[in-house]
Structures are given as structure tokens and as C-alpha cells.
Image (cartoon, rainbow, N blue to C red; front, side, top):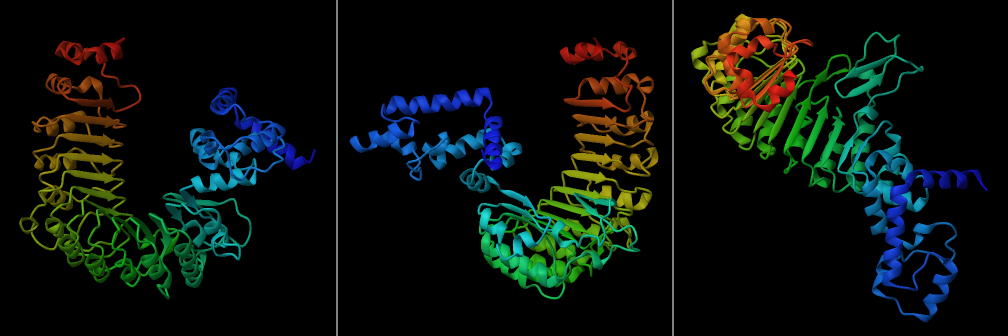
Length: 495
């Protein structure tokens, strides 16, 4: 037997476990009960087909099955029935399933909806394999394919966000030389626009010299809802404004260690605001906008609910005051920001944004007391505050959050400078607090929890207490009656 044929049969046996093989036999048995002449024997099925007219059960039989079925017991099954079987298998094993036969590979390719491209030739080559094989793609990530591989094989890998790229250890910098030319990027976007009409999410690098690829994508992707644009500039935002149904946009102007783009200013955000009026989520990474740009976003994008400032953005002073123009903003997220804002006017002129309900700070440096106070004044009516691995957040800085009187949910993770006393001084002033999460805060200790604080713990709807690996609220809290109020959960935890 040929080696490839043996490999296919072996993959076929591994794919069908005992339970799945029994289910498959049950399907065939039901087909035979509906039509007694229906069998997996090719000779019987061929002879009976001459003497009987097709029954309704024949709808399950593949019309492409040949007379000589050989050992392929699935040739009698329709594509629709096989697809239902493949969906029950699960996505991690679909790659192995496609090795059984060309027919199975074709059906498996039709089930793939997400793809990350590592080599642009798979898209732009003569065979156009990506658009030929995968017709129903809903998400495509072209960013890894936009970086040139190092000239010599290297084991040095640089991880930045969701991407891990091989780097040349002899290279002095990782600037524009690592990116392919803009003409190739445009060509790839044009090919993708012509072959994937139902695309909903796209991650790509913006070309510099021409926006022809982005223009083609804007007109050929009417269903596109999410776009991540790396190395973005003001000129690249002009065709983006043609995406009328765009709801989620992430603008990455530069990434430290990978590339440095021309940047995004208030001009680009103003162009974007007048075009993409259905934006729901907007993320600005490495952008240099200020009050005017965000004010235009707030006035034009009336559906904007979530705003993220990330990756050490070069936001100029005054952007915080523009949040008051975002009439529907509910979530404000700050990620990896060295400084929140540089204020040029008194705090009294900032105003507030009463619609903001969630304030999330992740990996930020909170060392400027004035800028942190300005942030809490703008988010005065926030109901949820979350700190994750923020540097410089001590008791003094954390006490500023008491400005927000309507907090219901608080989460502290990786805040090693906050003590038990600092935590108590703030949360006891919040009468509406319902949820508390404390994780990896080594300066908060069980033996320092006061009776007033333990009484507050007992009435919370959601409570997660793990300030370090050893803290589980020791038994000295029993005197506060907390175990009685906690019910079965605390009795199980104590035992």
C-alpha cells in the first residue's frame, strides 16, 4: 500500500474514537432503516439503484459519490452531514481531519473563520492560496507577514503585545527596515478585498506612500466592523473614514522596539470623526493628539462607549478635558502610560464626564498626584475602578480615589505599596461598595484587618481576597461574625 494512503487511513482511525465511530454507525443504521436498499456495499448500492426510484432518505447521500467507493465509507454522506460531524470534533483537531482526503480538506477549509498570516506570498502569490481555499474568513491578521525575516536564522525572539518576531541580534535598531515595502502591503490588501467579501475583522500595517489598498478595502469590505491599523498616520486615516459600518478601531502609531511611524495628530482624528460615526470602541496607541482631536471624536461619534489610551501615547495636555464632550462614554481604559496628563489650566476648568462607569488602569506609572486627581475629578461618577500592576500607587495616591463617591466595584491587582490601613481608609467611605478584589498586594495582611473592615467584607456581594499566596482570611476574623454571614462558602473555606 502506498505510504500516503496508509497515512490517510491511520489519520482516519485516530480521528474516529470508539464513541464517535459508534455514533457514525448509528447514523448509517438510521439511513438503512429509512431505506432498506441503502447500504455501504458499493456493489449492492449500485444494483439496487437500478430497480428503485430515489427515496427521501437519498437526500443524505452525496450526489458526488462515484460507483467505485472503495474503502471510503463517508462517500455516501452529503457535505452538509459531514460538516455537522466536523463541527462536533472541535477546532483543535480540524487540521488533522483535513489530511484524510481532498474532499475533507475542502470542507474543513470552509469552516475556518480566523487566520493569522505569516508569509504574504500565501496571499499575493500566483496561486492565491488564501482566497482560493478560505472563502468564509471573518478575521485576518496580516501584521506578522508585514515584517521581513532576519537575513540569517536567529533564535532571538522579541515579543510585543500579541506578536512574537525573530530579530537579528547584530542589528542596531528595529526600525522601518524590518517592514516590507508599501507596494506589497497595498497589493495584499487589494487581493484580500477581492477574495474575502464577508470579512469582519482586519489587522494590518498601513502603507506609507499610497493608500490604494486601504481604499480598496473600504469599498470591498462592507461588513467590516473591527480594524487594527499599525504604523498609522493622518493620511492613512483618510480612507479609513470610508468604512461606514466600522465599530471597533485600534490605531497604533508606533510600537517601541518594532517600528516608529509618522504619528497621528488632531488632524487625523478630526478626519476620522467625520467619517466613522458608528464607532463604539476606539483605542489610541502612540498618538500625539490633544483636546481638539478628542473633542471632534466626542461630538461626531455619538455611539462611542469605550476609549483606550495605550502604549505610552504622546497625548498632549488638555485631552482629559475633552472627555466631557463624549456624551455616551462608559469605559475609560489607560494602558502602559508613563504620565496621565500634563495640565496647563486649573483643575476647576476640567469639568466631568458623568456617563463614565468604568475606569481601568493597567501597567501605568502613577507618580504625579495632580494628574491622578484630575483623572478622578473627570471620572467623579464612576462605579468601577480597577488597578492592575500600576507603579507608584501607594496609600497617599490611592486616597485620591475617595473623590469618587459612587464606586460599587473595586479591584486591586499587583499593587504592592497599598497597605491594609490605606485600603480601609478609602473603601469605608464608599457606602455603595458591592464587590472587592484584592490580588497580589503584599503589603495588605490578614492580621491587620480591623473589625470594621471585616464587617464590610461580610456584606459584599462579590469578594475575592488573595493579597499574597498565604492569605486566606485567618480564623481571628471569627469574632466579627463574618463566618456566620458568609454561609456555606466560608464554612467550606475554613474547613
